[in-house]
Length: 295
Image 1 (cartoon, rainbow, N blue to C red):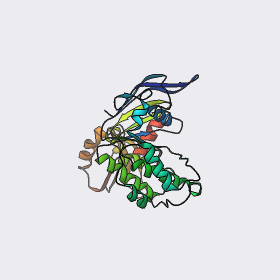
Image 2 (cartoon, one colour):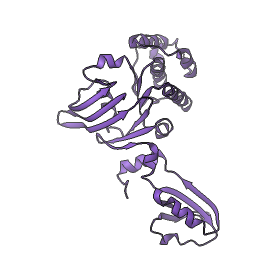
Image 3 (spheres, rainbow, N blue to C red):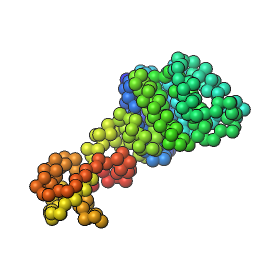
Image 4 (cartoon, rainbow, N blue to C red):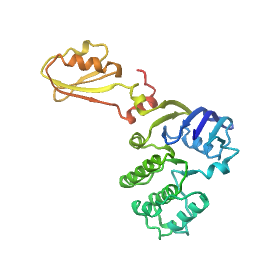
């Protein structure tokens, strides 16, 4: 087990930032950590990094205590925050080399490839860099280091879609090496593409954890059917949000457990077109955030 958080709580005075957080990441897993701003994502990450001391609970990284054994743990971690500050008078290349040396561990043979793919001019001073270029420096430094756990807190903030795809490529590359990744991101399509499992945090509490497919079981499928027949869908108690589209098709939702039933029922009519869509991670997240999961 690479990371294990048990009943973690963190208070700042009378304010409870985290309450009974539980999270596990195993070797070779990419775990998505999502939630609205202020939900507690960064506070959790800073506790994992040993920046904050838990008020209660246990945070274990590589079987060691995150607070007491932080020095040893950091030798095996690469971390990228969402807002990177660099030394203004150093070039990007000098900062990358400095980060790699400070890390003190093994080096991945990807440094030059990373610089090329991220299209970074490493000769420029950091004070001339945009937010996106500062982010590239941090990502190149992280991936050029042979870590066992990569922690990314909004890592693609400021990057264009092409550079986001480069980030995705290298996340999958370290995963293929058996490394683990904790990815905190507001880009839900990114989480859906990369992660084996996700945890949703709201108001300092994890309200749901599991694989993306397990989340989809909790949400209705969206179905569109076009036919010349009159189908009495409004009489079916497992059909929700029934409407007629502009082209005369039926649009409605069914729960996952009723999907085979509605497909068999539709087979008794002259159906010209049938479309069934799984809910996106974004819709699942909004369902949790709005608190209507079981409605």
